[in-house]
Image 1 (cartoon, rainbow, N blue to C red):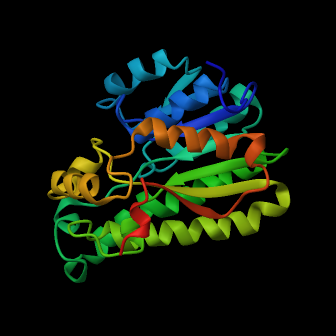
Image 2 (spheres, rainbow, N blue to C red):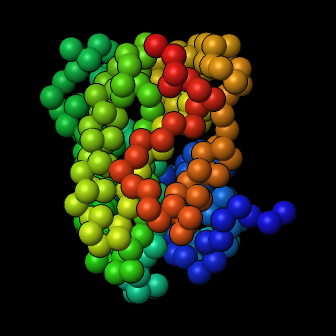
Length: 257
């Protein structure tokens, strides 16, 4: 089947593949199917065995460790992009983290340390990636991150990640405005609830999935393939004049109060 968009020759860096069922894997699959060249990261040695088989299936050219909490690892990653490819056309940021004790508690009870760590990994790392990608996108490019509608509405049990994702969405708009003159676009994709390993850390997430499936206008949950289709379009030349958006892929969930 002919892909909807052509990414032949475009170089993309995918950050956040946890396993074959992660949102980042769904996006990477779409990028691959559309002809892109890919590089990807794994968090650490413990995660590598889960990521490497997915990367091999997708024809990822190279893998690298990247824990944004470790000083120098993110910078080393972009140095490798420069040495391997000489430039970059698009990037997907699909990582988030909050300490369990803060994630499972009330927002008003969150610790300063927990909030700071959640913001650093889930939001500020996107700004760091944008800054490092900027000189590699001399002909323009696209930066994507992943959010959730709990940034706009109070979602039971989403807790601390709500304010953190709200910050990420605001950061995306500023990135789009500041890097737009260089032809670099930025978007936050907002999928509906998807059963991923990362989402399983949210307390009673299975209940959220059940409610979403029953109440969204389309009466079905979205998949990682649905997210990948949007991601591929946004990084393609077909999306070259779209930037600074927060785009839902949620079966219409964002329409509901």
